[in-house]
Amino acid sequence: NNFELKQSLINLVQSNQFTGRKDPYNHLRFSNKVTSTFRHPEVPNTTIKFLLFPFSLEGEARTWLDKEPPRSILTWEDLVYKFINQFFPPSKTTYLRNEIINFLQKPNETFNEAWERFKNLLRQCPHHGFSELHQLDTFYNALNPNDQDALDSAAGGNFLDKIPRDGLAIIESKSKVRYSRSHVTDSRVSRNARLPSSSPSHYFDLQQIAASLEDKLDIRMNHFEKSLND
Image (cartoon, rainbow, N blue to C red; front, side):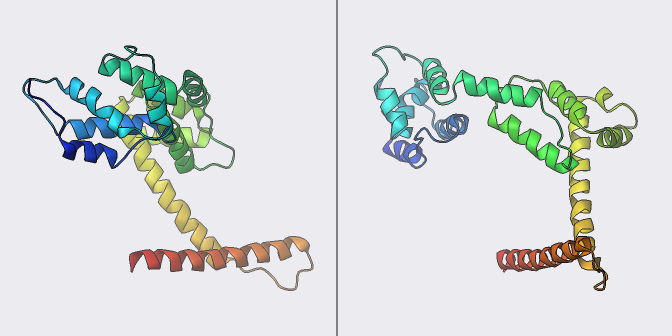
């Protein structure tokens, strides 16, 4: 076979090298995306991945690969297994799986905040192995009664009776609505907060200070958002 790796392909994978400090799954996705753009009629895609992958490593990650015993990695599957085991060890997987299983909405956490935190845990451990149904069941049962009732109401009955695709759509919809409402409410509270200046209570003094700080924060955020849009 007259096959050789194109220098342009090598340059492409070297533009986003893995050092061992970032998410190894993201790097595998990047590698798969790059190699999917190249085809050879006589060479399997897994072989191209296998040959190209070392060029995508540097620093600690490249040192690890170079120190692997001879003939210990013979296929793309071998390489992926050892790569993940090295940079996403089983102990980290166990920890994140437990965080997902035992997920609970915090006392002062909004629906949107809880959902974003739950999704972030899932993203951190893409090989968690939980089905979509299991994920939705875990999230629903982690919520406070009011938010559970809100999901049931949106579902027109028991939320968990919905198929995963519909359940996810309901959660995303409720999350966006509640996020929007909370921002509107916070804005109104900060603008309308006016407390009696004659009150000798330290409680009122503290609230006045807090309201003033919130107003200043709103002004700074507005300037920041405006600078982004300009």
